[in-house]
Structures are given as C-alpha cells and as structure tokens.
Length: 159
Image 1: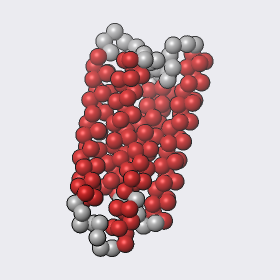
Image 2: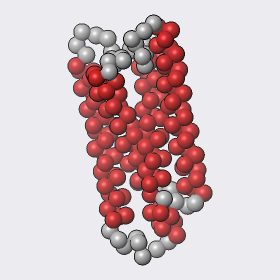
Image 3: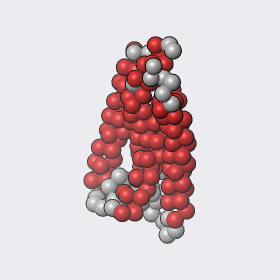
Image 4: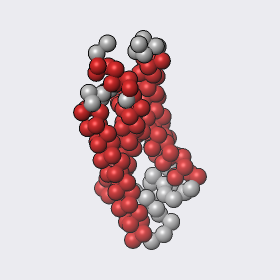
C-alpha cells in the first residue's frame, strides 16, 4: 500500500473534522450573507433591538470565518503530510453543513425561538425547505462517511 493511503487512514479523523468545520463555516456564511444581510429576513438574535441584532450578526459572521480558517489550516496540514482524503473530507463537509442547518432550523428557530427564517404568516414552507435540505445534506454526507469508514474497518489497511 502506498504511504499516501496509509497517511489517509492514519489521519482519517482529521480529514473528517476538517470537512465538518468547513461545512459549518460555509453554512453559517451563506446563512449570514443571504438571509441576514442581502434579504434582511432575520438577524441571528431577534429578541432585542435592531442594533443588538446587527451585533449578533457580526459575532455569527466571525464564528463562520473562524470555522473556515480553522478548517483550512487542517487541510494544509493534511496536504503537507500527503494525507488529504477527498471523499472523507467531502462527507465531513456535508455533515457539517447539514448538521449546522438542521440545528439552526430546529433548536434556534423552534426551541429557542431566537429568530425565524422569515417573519411571515405561513412560515411552515420555509421551515420545511430549510430542514429537508439539511436532512438531504446529512444523508449524502453520511453516505460518504460510511463508505470511507468501511474501508477503515475492513482491516486490509491495517497491515
């Protein structure tokens, strides 16, 4: 087996976590940019003044960039070790994006009620699209994760 494959398996968790971090960063960035700034549908925290909503958006935006930059440092480390595993990383990225979006749609929108996706009479359609797209990303990400996990667990790479 090549040393690159051995390194992929040795650093498989780092590949997964790097993808998850980037997925969280991308989902948060898209949410912030599209729904908060361009469409003005909501702020991260809508239970106070508009100024407080803008401050919360700034903190949320900073969080998305910290996750993205952290992920890219991990990718650079993996590449320097010839250990970057694209399939596992894409699976992690989709798990991060879908997990973040489902968390946002269920915990923040419905349980904590710190904001809604949009303030309209019939928000159910928006919630369904938001949460079903999250579940779709989670399913595809889980497919890639299981595919790479089977290779790890097969034992043929542990020689």
